[in-house]
Structures are given as C-alpha cells and as structure tokens.
Image (tube, rainbow, N blue to C red; front, side, top):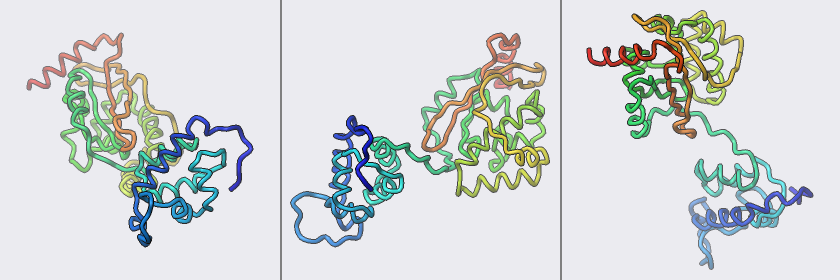
Length: 286
C-alpha cells in the first residue's frame, strides 16, 4: 500500500472522513473487540494502532488514511475496517463513499415487512392496481384494485408469488393478453433479482420448483436472457371488458430491503378506462 500519485481526490471529503473514522473509533472499547482493557486511556475508544492491527495494515498507513491523505485503498481493506469498527450497513456504505469507492451491493434478503404509510398510499389509489414485491417476488401487500385484477387473496399464502402465479395459475396466464411475450420478459427481469440473492435458499428453491412444474419456465430460464426493469404498456384481459391497455411502473419502497411498489394505471388513450374504474367499484360492492 503506497501513496498514490493521482490528483487529490479526497480533498472534498477529507474532513468528513477523518471525523467519521475518529467518531467510530471513540465509540468502541477494547473489550468490544476482545482486547484487554489495559491501562487508563487519555481518550475514549480504540487507539489508531489497535484499529490498524485488527484491519491488517501498518499504523502509519492507517494514520494517513484517517487523515484523508491521497492514498490508494482497496475494497478488501474497507471491508476489514468496517468489520473492525462494527459499522452497520448504512455506515459501511458511507465509508465507501467518503473513500471514493463504489459501495458493494447489499446482500439479498426476502423481507416481508412493509411500512404502514405505504399501505395508506396504496389505499389512496382506488383505480390503480398496486402491489409490493420482495426480492423473491412474493406479493407481500396489495390494494383492493390489485386484488380485483390479480386475485392475490385467493392464492394460498405460500403460493402468493408473482412468478409462481404467472407460470402455474391458469387465470394469470389468461389475464396477460400477450402472455407468450410478456412472461419471458418478466422472467428476464426476475433473473436480475436472482443474481442479487446469492446465498438466499428460498429463491433457489422457487426456481427449482418452477423448473419442475412449468415447461415454459424451464425452457426460458435456460436461455439466460436479462432485460431491464419491466415498465411501459401491458395489455390485460378483464372478463366482461376485454383487453385494456395499462401503463405500469415499479418504484423502490425500501432499497436496502429490496421492496418495490408496482403500479398499474389505464393508459391515457384507453377507451375502457372509465368502464374499468366502474368495474372495480361494482366488484368491490358485491
């Protein structure tokens, strides 16, 4: 590890980096890391030499880094330092940004807890089918309009998964007017989430099950197509109304927990927009 001849890239964040690292050292005690308490200390927290030793670097080099000098740092060192300083996910990301490094992706998790204010937001969209997906594409929350269209509440709890419904539930296949084109496009979007979920067994189990029960899924999964997020227009077939064009988009609800809000709205020029809104109210009343 040497001084870097590059321009002074840490000029802007040098003071913040120094204060951040010092504050995180000072909040820890030697016993937090299994070190002997030793003699009385003039300042609280860990000493620089203790942090350097535990992070696997020399004292002089760590001192230069904490002072914000223009030195090269590796992701391995930052990971070691985050571990030594017991940084949480937000603090770890902040360290990377202060050091002008790209923050690593957070580990994938299939969370199911949604903030209550998101529920209130969805309920305020009576003519906009909306639902929340986690990383596994489990449908963890939906509003009344989405339930009328997708019939989520009729699915067994363990099968309330958008990908499972798309490939296994006949009614979902009929709902998507151009299913042979839409299903592989949605599957390719899911593949990005699958790649983010390394080490999450329930996602791998879902893929294994779908490969066993759906020949279409099995064939398309083997093609390894990867597209961007599914947004734009999609035609859904509503009984008694026929095909209706919807605009749909995906919004991030909680990035760290991989929760996303999917919202459908009848396309601006869709002639059946008003009949669809009336259909939602009529179904709701019955």
